[in-house]
Amino acid sequence: MVSGGPYGLEDIIGMAGFGRALLLLAIVPIFWSLPTALMVGELASAIPDEGGFYIWVTRALGRFWGFQEAWLSLAASVFDMAIYPTTFVLYLTVVFPHLTSGHRSLALKLAIVFIATLWNLRGAVSVGQGSVRMMFISLSPFVVLLAAALWRIAHGGLHLAASPHALQYDLGGALCITMWNYMGWDNASTIAQEVDNPQRNYLRAMLGSALMVMCVYILPLLAVWAVGIPASRFSTGAWADAAALLAGPALALAVVLAGSLDGLGTFTALTLTLTRLPYAMAEDGLLPAILKRRTSKRVPWVSVLACATGWALALGLTFERLISIDLVLYGAALVLEFIALAVLRLREPALHRPFRIPGGTTAAILVGVGPTLLIAFALWNARDDRLAGMPALLFAALVAIAGALIYAAARMAHPHPHAGTHKT
Image (cartoon, rainbow, N blue to C red):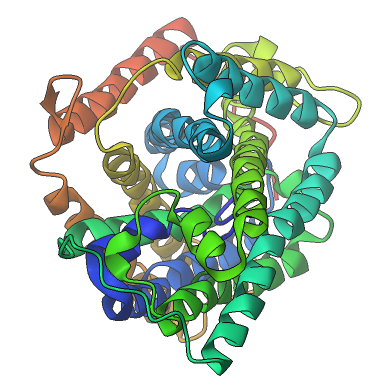
């Protein structure tokens, strides 16, 4: 849900150069990923309920803000989930352009949604096991790439001529893409009731994965930097070119195919977590009760089908700067989660917390400062972006206002929503 491999890093290198890209990939997780992992570790261990961050915000701030948390997360998912089928098609186009031309491109994207939906109907265990297998498949070409780079380094590198095009620095854009590549830790919280021993396993998963993702990003960057491939040659899909330079067309083909599968794997894992939000909201009487229906494997199948339909309808839309608007909406939801962490520390000091962020309540409050500042920068960086013919920030504001209106409508339809079944 956070990373399927180095795919997506190419634009960071092309925008910032190798040295600055390395600094971003090493420093950003300290102020972005680690605080989020600690927050999820504490709240998921204390309140291991289905719905995750929606439940935390509701408990700390009330039903209105809980609804806004879920609404912002689902709205962000429309933009985020459109990226992964697009990535699948983009990498496939490198080798098989005839398969992705015309309407075939949309058909392939719809196929990703269909496969992910069927996979999710088999249950969380199936998705989890499949994600692990696809992780190894996605990373295997990069193991070969690293080995080829080490061999090249031992024999003097590639000595490639610099690109005739000078590097166009865009550090703001590079930082936002870095944040996007490191976001998603809180998504794992929504399936808490389907996780074995969540009080222990959430923290272990968060911290172990944070370290592994950093290595997965940094090692390939160091490899292509060391062999002398110019940073100006890097843009989306450039890993295939780097693989061809280092080890030939066979490795390039492997990178392309693994990159396509990476889009499917990430989409499938995110489908697992995002579809638990409508289910949890239906449990609280804020959405139709039909969304509470589950299979024998505890899969909220109506919610899965509803979300998949919404994402499929969004695939035909073309957006400018998908990552920017995704960051803005996701960031607003993340800030609410950090506020919930602080409020629960102050309001419920006796709440059993198998894991507590060290340093007391002050540290728990301050842990959200880094992510909040980065989100504020993402807002500033998106000031000139446009979406659907209007400024992207205005579009995001309208999305937020729509959440408040939908909540009001839901309360009118169900004036006495029950408290739900989310008990710790």
